[in-house]
Image 1 (tube, rainbow, N blue to C red):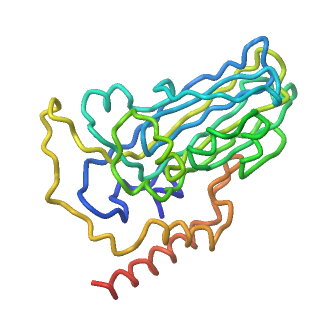
Image 2: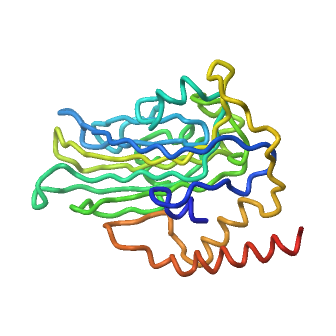
Length: 263
């Protein structure tokens, strides 16, 4: 719960995933997103269960939507390319803000946590924006969208390989979309990723395959608890402290109690 709710500052611990365990690392990287002189809309997305990103600019929201996976916005890419064989996510978020002067900021913002497969059938950028969990006016605030696991995100996946058509509907991604922007608008954003990875043979690291999880609490149970105590916990505007913190603590106690009954 803590790594999902606070990927930027929570302790690094293993999740309730079954099977073998890997090494855990938090990566954070700062980027710039330039909209371009011919575009009024754009988005950036990150699929942390596979370690791939996607982004594009559009002349309008009615533009045809096509996407391609890349490593352009994957924090820790150089390290993981050298050392990782497979990855799975324990927490991730995108935080985005406008570089324009506060009184000059105009436009709309869209934030969502959706499965990767949703992108394949969007058709237009407007259809893609309709998938957002949050839709509102762009302001001088920082906008943050957090990730939570899909049905197959408890499994290790090959690093840097985009989900297949079959897996895409079961692996979640996070995105922030923008529309109604002036030409040449520039945004700053930061992606934080808590990743569990298994090392490749060339890294010289031992695979901790003997350290396995029993998986007594399902990842979906953790997400359900978060959704119950604070709906829309995955979208945040501004820098205020989350009022979900007391509920997270109580939820952790509940989870520990349930686990005790099953041991």
